[in-house]
Length: 119
Image 1: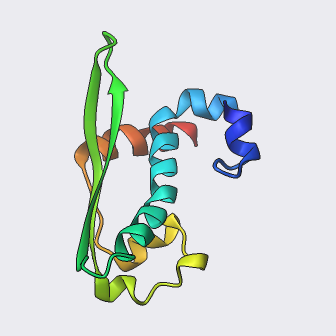
Image 2: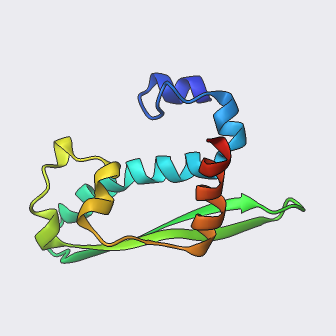
C-alpha cells in the first residue's frame, strides 16, 4: 500500500515504513493536511458557501484494540480568504499561515510526541 501511495504522489517518497510504524498518527495527520486544500477548493466552488468550518479527526485503536475518534485540529476559512488563494500552487503546509488553527491537547500529546520521539 505504501509504495502505491508514493507512486501516485499521495505520499512523500522519502517516508520509510519504519517512520510509518513509529509515527502512525503523524502520518495520518500529514495526509489529512495535504487533502484539506482539495476539500476547501471544492467547497468554495459553490458560490453560496460563505465559510468552511473544517475539522480533522483521527480514529486510533486504544491499548485494547477499541477504536476511538480524536479531534486533532479545526479551523474556519471565510470566502474572503479563499478568494485570495491560488489553488494550483497552494498546499496544506501553508494553511497555518492564513487561518487560525486550533490544535487539540490530544494532537499535542500524541502526534507532536511522535515527532519529538523520532528526533
